[in-house]
Image (cartoon, rainbow, N blue to C red; front, top):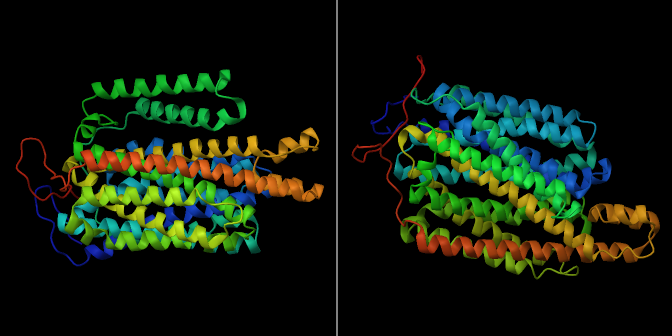
Length: 522
């Protein structure tokens, strides 16, 4: 495949669609991992004795590392070659998945998830940052839609295959599905993807990277531990204060840097900032929802892991339809209208879901899940396209890294905050009258643990109370999701540019852009 220097038009080489296939394979890997773990958490909670807090860390160890390292990952791609770093990320992800399959306890799973987060941090922004070198502005929305569809396709296939594995093998087998997918992604990138880079990109700032990782880690830790310890606990207050100091130090340091890791100038571009905020709030909603939904399907409705995966399909179906249909709808009505409408649909779906009761059954859940997928797809695809369109050519990697970092921060906070709200509401509502203190404490850790205690005690009342308490907590989570979606819709409708932003470099005329290339021999 030919590659091009900055300023040349993207040529209509038909092999660009094969190159997109390499990126699709990479995104499938991340899609698989996200939902396999969500479906596996109830099973792992039962077999490993994991509390709700530990389950949050198994989910968030990946997301926090993912978010903390995406900014330097984008710079590494700009400096050393985006294809090279993408292949490296897939290799690290493969190694982390192998470690996860061999893990013997909660701590080992959390460590493996953190390693996988390092790989994912390289995969996500670099898969996006090479798009401008492959596609012109007229095709970029379609390309982003296909990548979004690939991520979405991994979401339903992950739970179905993972659920089948959980029903037939040990819990560690859910990590094995990543190994062949990562290997296929590596081969596809090596043979199909052109190398692109920005030789003027700055070195990675180790101190800024450390401030990002520790600041985000302290913030997520405080949010996860607060329901158990209390918001006034000295440890929670201390980590919250430390997070504020570290992240403030990061912002101050980056504002003085000539080529910063956290490029605040990009946030001054209205199209980039507002599209990124919209995409971040959507990830807050979706990540929280995907954390609370599998225990409801599995523990409250009584499905096995495979059945839980199948029952997530309506949301993925809606997402696939929206990802495919976003481009013509945006062309007709404009990005601002589509993003705003998608967020309103997402809010409606959450409000509808908040009407779920213990006796609602799966049919009602399938209805609001389908609407959730439609709303998510119609707002995130044009928002991502608008954010990428606002980036200058020489910041493709670092700008994509900033976009995906903020999205992942939204996802991490969604899991931590909404998971903590759920845990608090569940524990407060659960009726443990008559249980010994140790059993009552165990039952309050999660709905899965409560059902195990109820089975040992032969208490139908405790099982019913656990179901009602969990649905109450899920209702609160969905109401918060609805409010967040409506707030994002209002911001988008008032402030979002309606036409894609035009990429330009300082002092230059508008023109089609492709990042600089390429290693010799490409």
